[in-house]
Image (cartoon, rainbow, N blue to C red):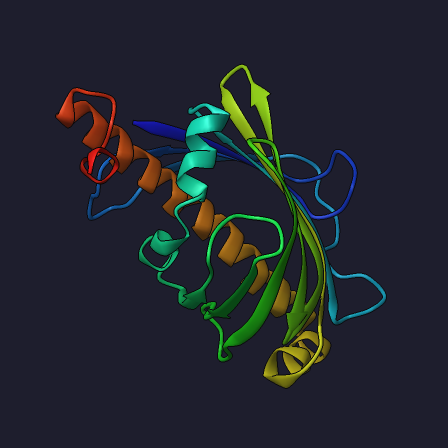
Length: 212
């Protein structure tokens, strides 16, 4: 079973929320979540269309194992049902990822992610354009519990309904943004658990797909 701890920080500093998730196999009730709140900070700045985010997710798995799974870009839409469309070659510098994202809100986001820097197994840095624009960064760090994955981004709603919602209801747009990140972390933890189960079942340290 993969365990996941989430530390949510909406802006730099010690403020945020810590949530623990125990993610096992599929169940009707979903993963069990236990959380405690520490000091929080406002998620909306003077520019109501901009969202600054810093979130950390701790997985009870090694960085190489996490990186190996992240490299399977062809599986992204299977892990993440809110990712309605995803076209990419791989987790490599210079690749261009075309995404259609559907948060649980009345709009769909179309974005292009320009992968700029990749350092296995510690860093991905990218620019974003489309309905939202800005920069994002994923960092993997060793942690006594396994690996801490830190996501930071500065994104601005540029066009379409997402821009209108960001200006009229910035807290709702913020919630949709955070929902995608936190749901994605839960779903990725499930994918890690499934991989563990497949490796254990095969008994040779590889999944069926990796042996072919």
